[in-house]
Image (tube, rainbow, N blue to C red):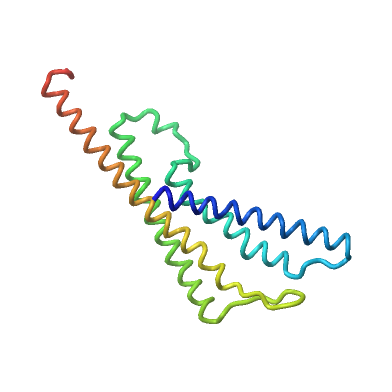
Length: 172
């Protein structure tokens, strides 16, 4: 799963490079020739930015790089921290699932009506970009559930280790 999230981040990097080339070309043509590229603002906002924001979310989740305040969790025992991590994974999976479902409903509507916007020179289909957040949140759900499985295994191993230490007399 980490490989899939790394691919998503790499794809985001490619999209960022394309966006930079697109915007630089637009600005360059505007100042050199006096004619900008049609639809640059719409393409940047509807495709590039959506991809850059949503695709790396699964990587952030799987590498545990979300913003966190550890003021309270630092005071907990390792067992309780593992349980807190389990709760966090469950909440992230539920939230990601609800978000994917709701965004998916909107993406299906946009696809059904072939949603598009009018630029100065052409109509730009926007319905495909509606599926990027659905994919990204689906990956977040999968990553969160896998993280939950890892945390449960850590909890079980922690309890087994504590039980073995108690039996051997290592703990009072």
